[in-house]
Length: 288
Image (cartoon, rainbow, N blue to C red; front, side):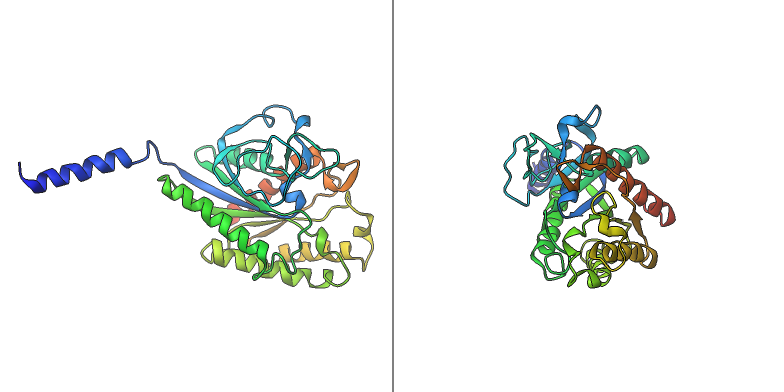
């Protein structure tokens, strides 16, 4: 037999064997911020279907802090979306915790029934925007790396993807007198950097989770840091293209720790972020 024919046959056989059994196209959404982005809600309070794995949504997350609880989802790999990627440092300690990702994924999947949904999540409790999440900050660098690593795994597995939007849930750590005044500028900078580094410069939907009156009464006091940051979040949503503000006023918080949303608050928060992103997608529709 001709050697070239044998060679070509072997190449074809190799490609068939090495090709993935299936290839999907994913719509990818990012979650970043501090502890309410990660989540301190008690997963034991969840009812079905949120209490179980969502087979139609994938999650890739990177644990940001040493944790004292158990039941975590595997990190640094793609897995079915489920409870167990929360903050992990709580009093009392919950066996599993969750954040906005559960209803974010559920709502986006329901809105895109013909598509595969994937969520990449990296957030750090107590982190600030003015330094740690700045363009040169260590957390922003890790966020970009985690995102790129997750997307590289999809590519290696033979899948394709579009990065479609981002959820930002943060602000509590920037409410000091020294940092609140710069929050609007810093948030605009973050959006610009994310779009440049991860969205190929496109004005992909960006959802800002606002500080809530459930968390601190200072949010209604003119001149206080909570008031200034909240107004900055609202202003950025009004002035920057394809940015939405999520109002979390009245959302449930933990009775022992008012700063953090409880299971009801996180359920509402994830859905509100998804609704905001879906509204932006309609204004600037993406493919498919």
